[in-house]
Length: 320
Image 1 (cartoon, rainbow, N blue to C red):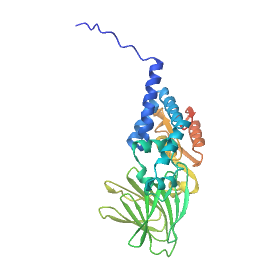
Image 2 (cartoon, helix red, strand yellow):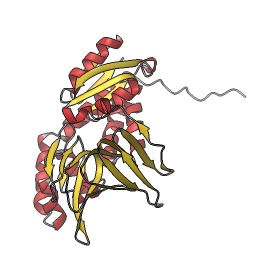
Image 3 (tube, rainbow, N blue to C red):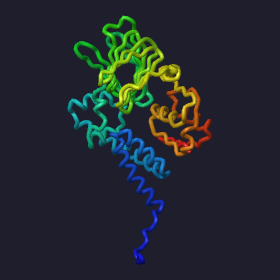
Image 4 (cartoon, rainbow, N blue to C red):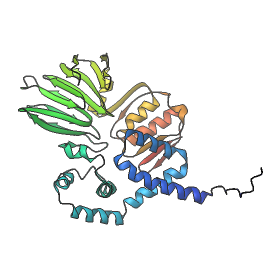
């Protein structure tokens, strides 16, 4: 049987741009409370076509325009409840567009922010002093809460990464919670990272006692590293602390690391999106020592040593 129905005309460039702009607006809203899967899907969408990246930049410009700022200001004036009072304390890390979307669509990932006593934006670090004498360096895009339980102070890492320095004679010892992880330490320097539901501990000096939800207990010593996920503790490993904790000194150090891992780490410090459209670069080994407060310069250096082409846009970098 012959099909005599008219053929569907192919998309014109104008059609493709219009469709990309519709999708970009949808992504802009979705990303305000995005999961890790959402972020991976967004990165894939950005890399599918050149008009997608351009459309997203256009959509972001519209959201951050004068009209949206005015609407966000009006919304803020109308919200006088307790959560908004606390939200104003953390206004800096939130964009105007994010505040508007939160007000219209709900809280999204704001529960983490609203629980936190200390927050850092992407690319920011913050030094803190806890009761009992422990010092903390809070890394990029991190949230920390100070709680008390039965008179004991507890530092809760809600997301991100923190480096704890506990002096000798601290009483009681410092207790740290990061998702499923419980840590107790005295006279110790150690780092805790909590991302995507997995906690990781690296001990630079002294000992740290760890406990899992299933009551697994492990003592880590200087030079040890361990992870805790849904399957429990991994096997403790010896780690190169000079490389693993280089961020404490403001550096990012890589030795024969796949470029995909390097870009994922740089992404944590870059306030925008990094897209690699050349899959052949993913496994390319990279060795280098970079400043973490200059992620764009790091990306330019990586493009140079890998012979990749770098396209730079506001809040977006694409490697080809």
